[in-house]
Image 1 (cartoon, rainbow, N blue to C red):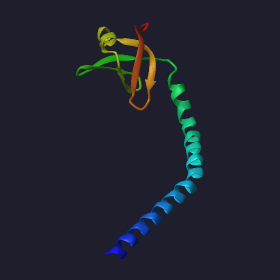
Image 2 (cartoon, one colour):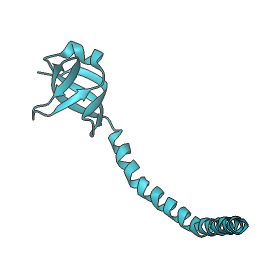
Image 3 (cartoon, helix red, strand yellow):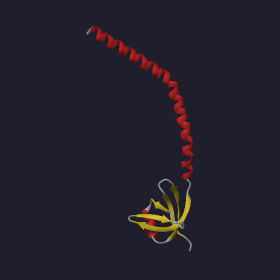
Image 4 (spheres, rainbow, N blue to C red):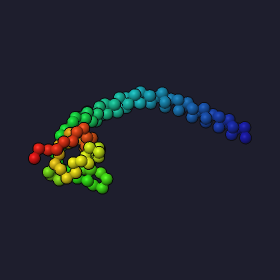
Length: 117
């Protein structure tokens, strides 16, 4: 019994030493991989900044259930995040100024106005 306790203590000490060496050895690699992750994140932030630019979209406001969407001349449909602004223009051709979220296909509306006929 005493021999088993001593073996257990020796094994625990050996495990603690291995863990300490592994942490000391791995720390230079953790810093290097973190720098690589930051470098890879940089290019992804740049497209987000270009999406932040406002654009003008022309099409017809259509009600889709409780949501309002803009359907352009090619048939592409974009959701509108401001139903109160879109509601008065249902069925009309409009110019919508806003920022496009390309992944969600939603325009963050800044302005809606009737298009010149």
